[in-house]
Image (cartoon, rainbow, N blue to C red; front, side, top):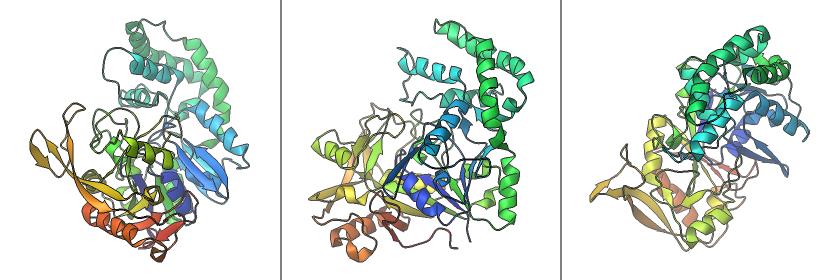
Length: 430
């Protein structure tokens, strides 16, 4: 049996929630290892819709342990609000089925305020963040001034720790022309939320080590996508953490040998939220059609996603960087009814052709995609559970993508429903 890491292989929003939920039926433990409540996962189970941001997808299944690893930045107020929301839908969340790493970094209200100030400022680069405070929290972690979950367990030490972090943040606030943060109000808010978070705080590294020793199957759940990785993505229009599979080890507290199989989630076309280069973007009626049929709006922010043709060159690049063993192809049914489809196979930049996207290519670089055209299909792929149920042209499309990205297709998702999957390879089987 192989422990499995699931990551998005594009710019996020690939349909990770459904795939992770489907795989969690075969897992005993589901671990979030990076990101924060900026990532939204939508699960559709027996007609009920669950929208998760911070909680691992395993919480909606009984008998599973969900873990928020140390690589995640945790907004304690958002965490408790999300727990209350899913409990209102009949999902019970207790310390028996949810563990939060005691060494995970906290997102504080001042992080969100700083994020918002930067994104609305007239100076500097606008990244197009969710304004949830993710980046500033990771900055404080790297600067060794952050508060962590364990600090909530020691309320008597909070005033000194808050004063320490405010030395940095109040200088920034003065630079933006804003009043300094109120240390007393922040300490009071943290002391109020602390008893609600404390029962979930655990040494996650030990919990996971014991699970491995007991032969439990572990599913590592990433957020965002490889192309938003702070090192390997389209920098600076990226998130503030490593989204590649290698971070599953760092962000959970297990060693690199913990991951036996890496599954990359790949949408059958391409979408992106926020700023940044997007070579195959379509701003015409076809792009609108993809967005409407795919319901392309952000789970967390509700922002409309930019849409375009499948970019095989970029996906191939991200799969190699992330060490992906096989892909789960999602939203194939959105392409039903197109007479022809285009697939990006490279780029023409300043008169030179590339089969990968060079680092440092900015928004105004004039990237011209090189396309390969394929025949579309008039039949339906929706809810198919076998290759025989797919139109022949759809099978050809999937097989051609497989060739172009140089990675096998492990499964194909044909609707938001959990069981509408064509399975070629069970990631949990060695």
